[in-house]
Length: 347
Image 1 (cartoon, rainbow, N blue to C red):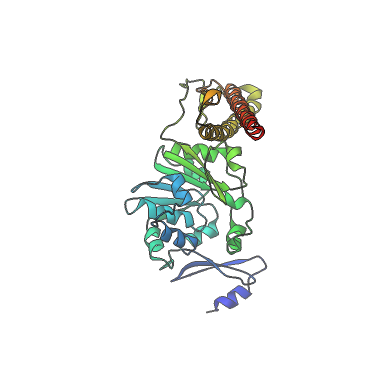
Image 2: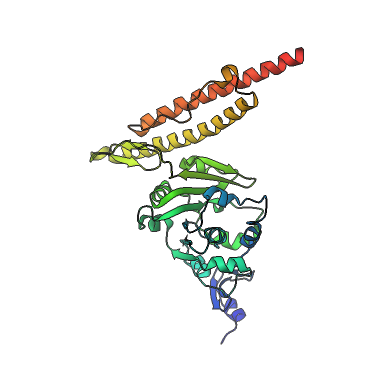
């Protein structure tokens, strides 16, 4: 039989070779370079730190995973996040990872004898990997059939800090996360949907997912299903926008496509505006807290746009009003603080 080296030598430029053995399935590229195979990697360090005092894994903090839960990792990659989640849910839980690239699926489902870390080996037994587009796979799942669904969209932009993942990035699906995928995730999740983005990314705003936590390199957005916004009762002639709480009348006739586009645009703008308002409101409350909340600076403020709304246009108008009120209050508070500092300096 030809050796692996000889087989690789016969590959055309840009070709790849899958090798299956006791160490699992590895992917070799023409021209050499380290093979891509399933291993514990950074997940091993995260698993070791999971029980350390004072350490908090950002993904686990955003997901708030509990023992025995069912978790969906909709962007599997090399299962780093899936292994951490599988460890967190324990023996009674499980993780379903979704991978759309056949070559990556072959690697991650290759079942190596060991990942090089005992905790990772144990967690891998609770991970199953499905092949397919995550939107289609989520659409095929029953309502509330998982506890948490999370997406990692960070591979859309290259990272100078992670050259070891160059092989993975070259194979990864770089399409942006769609609003339909988020809608399906909200339908499937019993508790929450989590979206990870780069610290300087804009995916959370584009998708209208509220910011939950920020670290040095990542941002985490969370849609909490345990306390969903109230929805206007739908009738036979209306449909609901799942995670915005808006009721939309279906378009008819030749204007249907245009009305659908306008509806989606306004709903997305409303969600992005609401997310920006929440950030400004948190800043305002922090400033008020620093001043003891006294006087006019402690005045009550709206905490969310009025809901339910009869249409995305009304929801957008309500969120803009709420945003403007918060911005004006924030500007007034900053002016007041600046005035007091100047008075103190003069005195």
